[in-house]
Length: 322
Ligand code: ADE
Ligand code: ZN
Ligand code: ZN
Image (cartoon, rainbow, N blue to C red; front, side, top):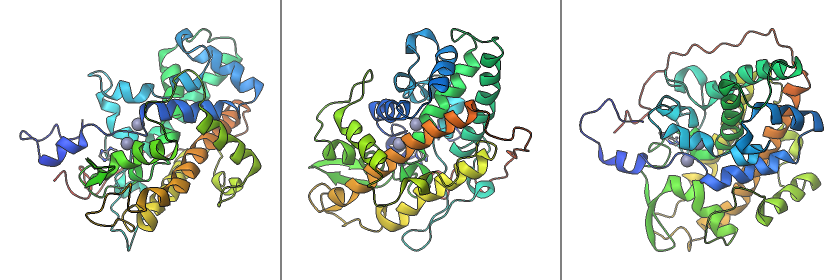
């Protein structure tokens, strides 16, 4: 995890250890939404790539990466869920790949790597060499994509400020919490009026509604803009564009509309964020479905160079683990 280099556990680690993603079942739901954009060919290929327990559904597999990051075996992937950019909101927000992607990898490099791997797995399926989820690395690549293309739309997964808000204490609905969880879970749960997790087996009406709004293209930013970068032969450029799109909210809303000391559910902060969360979740779903389709369609130019070597300016993010 994040603070293993230190012998004493810094106070913020207590906040930082738990939050890692949109809430677990929100990931399932984003990937269920994405399923509805898949072509019959992509749906067929995916059935061969996922292990049988997922029944060919990326929705069912959408939360796997978080559980995996919390195992000893998968701990190496815990930094792949975010990119800790050196923002100074509300004045300046941006993400730079070589500056911000940690040595162990970040969400941008993880999406790029999983894309390249998944592309080779699709070829293996097409050649009849891969069936029944028999290649664990192929299944992992798909499960990583199904998860990270969701995570990258959560603004605090693309900001290093206060460790992605994990070290930013706030009050929400009378409970003391931190800003990261507010954006991972609490705003959306309040918007959906949900008092328990969503299903991990079928799509929930809140998310079906987002799907129909996506199809009708009624969000305040048009769907073609969400897909402005969607060529899997430039995975770093696209993942970086998605990270920048999401990170812009940290200046524009997340850290600029905080009413200090107020309860964020009551102060108008949460209701102002409802449209942002709906939009971000919907972007994740449409991008995921489109990305997988384009890889399966062989639409992209495969021999393009992908540069992944990084020299981050810091290891522990802008706050250097403090
Ligand atoms: N851990 C450190 N930075 C993080 C971030 N931006 N999002 C989630 N977990 C983190
Ligand atoms: Zn995650
Ligand atoms: Zn998170």
